Length: 417
Ligand code: C5P
Image (tube, rainbow, N blue to C red; front, side):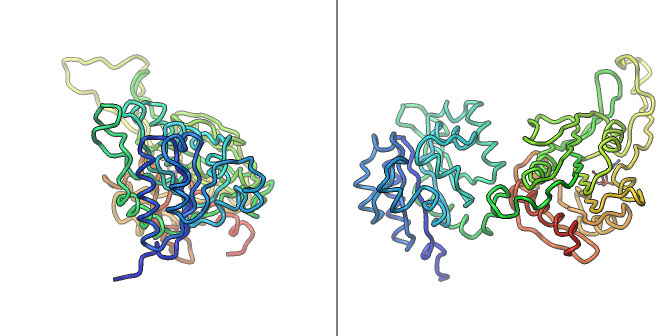
């Protein structure tokens, strides 16, 4: 049998205040049985459900619960707590803890530690079914997934509150399995803001396109696509985090403007083309948008009506290829031009062909085949194709793809690669 990664792992377990906190005691035992070192942080509410003494006895170390305890901070401060862990596990994660994590609140030891970390975080939610299903909680979960945070559970079942449905904390052994899976994944990439590469793209002008385009058929209908814009927004934000002056030209999305980024909202490919030209010159151009190749030539001035003569015929005409134009713009060309290739088949071959045909320095290729979960999903699995070869990146959050890509672009910009 292969030795478990757990045998040398250091786990920081954050226990939130819920009935299922008692299961966390079993979780500590299971983790330690497998050789892991476990440190425990409890919220004030958690201490209403289980005694810190029990958690301390099982983990073999004093439980931390107070941000403002000088003696504790002198021994191991809240920053050091997260730094010395391989993985942070939040179990049970209450609706309140999820909301704090999603929005970056830091008003006790647990939330402050979670905000101060660049380590992987695994969350085991536990709450009343209606709290779990509430749009606010689901929004928070979506934000956290986008931040690269992993989830285990919640399970369906009878709940302490007498209701039935999703909300029960995953069983300790299921959490142990999820911990092992997380430990197997490549280590998290440090957040740009927390790494010495803060100035990686200082004062560089970066233009990013993102999202779909909508090509009108008539005043009511349009031809669009399933692009969510998440990947392009993450790239714009990552570039801004490392000092770049970023303009994001976005098609219609439901995403909020990334902080520190100039956002120009457009609908059609031609508007995107115009907005990109207006944002130039730039040092770096990243075309992450899913631009419609074709638009309707005969857009109806009024809503098309059903007639007795059958279906209307839409005549299509080609849209400008923004990427190809910018990449081929001679002396005006940005130093680094990056394209995306969303393919349903022959991903690599098509990406290589696109690199040459469009004249870019990098093509980031992914599969958008049914079941890939790329469109609208929080994760991406990409190949990065250049003239020197292909890099295969493991599945990771779109934010992590963005950070890695921005680091790669910066090295190209400096002529290092
Ligand atoms: O040719 P295809 O649409 O597959 O190419 C995808 C790449 O080209 C993406 O980077 C996309 O943003 C860019 N593109 C563009 N303008 C178009 C079509 C695609 O910038 N009209």
